[in-house]
Image (cartoon, rainbow, N blue to C red; front, side):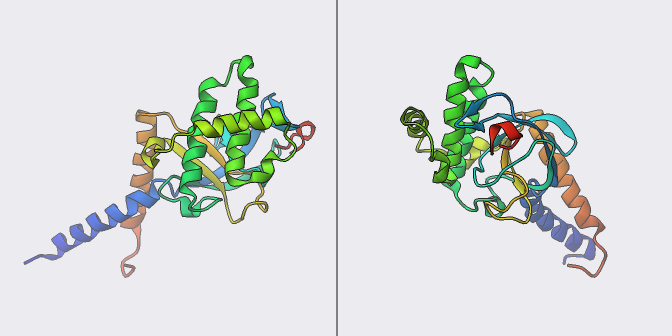
Length: 226
């Protein structure tokens, strides 16, 4: 026979299991764009960009959203998503495109910082944008298109979501592409301890909320726009 205490722990265990997965990246907060860097291609800052994310200054973010614009100094609310919550991301359940964008993001961060790679960073940024919005390629020269296509051709065909567990998608709230107050960005969390702690605190917050529930309830480069 199962007593009331055992029943409570059974319910708690099931609730925690169901809670942790979505709650880990159901975080929300405020993002303020603080810098666009100096790298410009086709009249557009190509990043990586700097932002204050939930009070953390100088956070490096990568844009995947050519349909919207961000202005330095402006702020907007975001919801943090990952590859298990793509239905809530700006472009929806486009798993292959988000995987490809994540892979290109990691390539960009790996070569960024060397001025000799500025052109390649530009190609990578336009490649990311083109995955979701082909209009991003309008206006590029033949040489630039070739550079973008060269990176698109390098994307592995066997990517899996597990390869990008440390990538958070910062999605503007309550909007669709082209109507947002700011753009959707990728943030790459440090691997290991920092990322694990992020997940732990998110899970604990979710579990705490469950325990506290009352009884009875089951673009122009010279304008600062990117």
